[in-house]
Length: 184
Image (tube, rainbow, N blue to C red; front, side, top):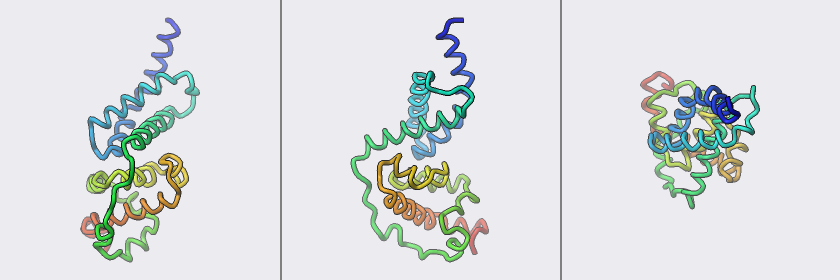
């Protein structure tokens, strides 16, 4: 077996089992846009293969691949977005905040308990400026500073976008949360 064949075999056995996880993350980041998610995964796999010599065998390949995917997405996001979308205050202030939601979850962690297709659909409906921080924070578990570094924005902007995204999700999912028994 040649060195090149050895590398390919190692890459296939280590990296390719994570395609489903990569595609799932790509779908969340792209708002359910399957062709865009497929392109993102393809770009990620190509970049990973090209830099396979920098992967340390025995470390977490899945995390390494997800980092490449996330960075690829962020770079694409930066390139495509010249400025954030304008949002009217009335869009996020339609429903008064529920005390029950703040008591149960002051940092928006309530979504960890109720993430299902309804919640995912609501997240996918958010504009990119809100969806990306919500996905990186609440679904991927990144800290505010990590999100700020990835998006190249101030931490205060991350907090603001997360707050506004959560307000939109709260408004969109309020009736659903009551129906499911999460709120009274």
